Length: 244
Image (cartoon, rainbow, N blue to C red; front, side):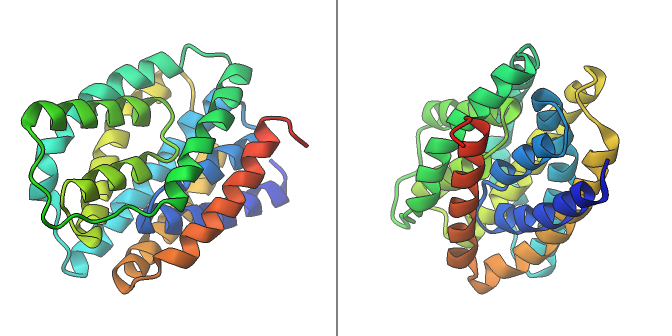
């Protein structure tokens, strides 16, 4: 690995960790950065999970120290997320690297749309029926296990539309994403889809950004970071799709 590739992963990982803690979608940056650093597509998807695990752990710790709680509220969504994530992880590893990179580039487009449309918080929303809750978060887990990129935004949108305030939803999202990643990472490791040197370098940046981002989320620094993510994701999506 070249020195500039390591710097790219460190600084890109820090930015992505901020984005993940504040809103979600940081993997739309980190997976393409791993590809640009020479990691094949499916291995980039697996290697990215190492940093996602550590950064969400850092963000969850920071939220807790800042007095934001979410573990008890996250329990009803964790079971369907875990079940869906296992299926998604096994399915995605069957794709070739070229196919994964094309799929990933296409998937980023609706994720960018979610980034632009800030979730509306419905404080008076009625709780979803149990079958709907299970179905929605099973689908979220399926997607997160397969691709990961933008799953935080999807979780955030679902949680806020279910009536959670944005800060609580952010914390629940972090706990759920941490659980999802802890479940699927061993699948990628066993199947040889993790390249440890770039994964650990990226993880250092993601963890730093996750800690800082949790503080930014509580203090309301969401708009600026979300805007930066949109611009970066558009550029990197075009690169993966071969538009320039």
